[in-house]
Length: 242
Length: 210
Image 1 (cartoon, rainbow over the protein chains, first blue to last red):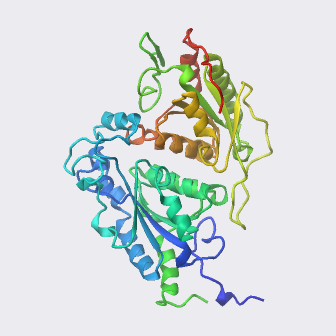
Image 2 (cartoon, rainbow over the protein chains, first blue to last red; image 1 turned 180 degrees about the vertical axis):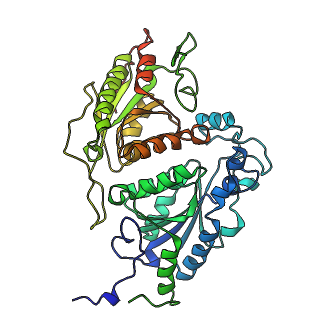
Image 3 (cartoon, rainbow over the protein chains, first blue to last red; image 1 turned 90 degrees about the vertical axis):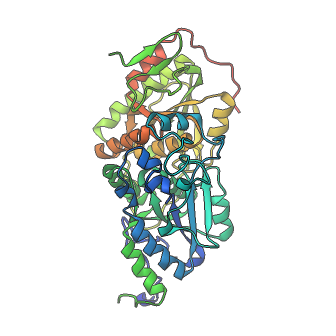
């Protein structure tokens, strides 16, 4: 009979404790930080120009910073993503450009945070609270999904990473698209519900529900304290509950 | 006000939200493909699903008759964690689409993953996509998102979709509508059918299938 105290810790999550295989291991787990850029959560950026409430997209920053610190201590792989386009917009589909202009936040247009959603501009930078440190991977993507037109999958496969923990913005757009892509590719995914935000609370709630529907068709969700508790145990700062 | 507009310049689905679709204002049926998601795993037996099936069938016939392409999308069995509930879909039901169609099998909820969908669309010059079918929150949305990232101009035909719940169906459309149509636009099937039927010059292109 297996001694339950020897079992690998799992994160209490919905609709199942994560990961399903109990294999929480820093060598095979990556923390993915989606688009924590000024354009999505800073003044004068893309989301601000569209007139949405920045408090909603910034709500997950503080808990994400705490998770990032614990995850770095644990030794897992940290991957940041940034959405943005080349300065000549040659990688921006014309319909995406057109739509952005209709809502008054034209991609490539000048603004308080530089040219909107253009690589290298102030608005494209990751905010200091969760900025990458030396050695961390940064993925630049032209679309919503971090797997499309990037080397993310190659990097994960090469590193032998099988488990992904998601934070970032916005929940219903780039985070959900990337999580769906990851799930299709067989990665075991967890979304930290308080480490993400959307421009609309209804869409945020629905996005979480879409993860957990059908028994967890895209993975599982948990609040960050659930993960931090497990990382504390794994980092030797706490004892596993009996 | 009419929900459709037909002019010498082009046609759009005027009732689409948040903008008259397609954005370029020159809808040509022969540039359109309908991606009908018909994986039985996602067909939940709700009263609304039967009506959605009927609209999907009529939409597919309209696309085909106007010269567009009808694609029926299914998926190989998903990798699912052990120990969690099986999908709650009801008994297997037949594909409701009766129009001539190209079957595509994907390896995930997105029709673009592990399939020949993209080369088929590129080779045929299909740039404007209608997306509908079973699993509005699942394969329909995943395929819509993947298509949008690839630059396709997408219209979610919302009432030709079967969803898990009415609440999720509402937000699945809201997610499209926000930020000026971040994944495209959405509209009702009848409005699309009206536009497709209004072009007497629409003829199928002579294409070879890769």
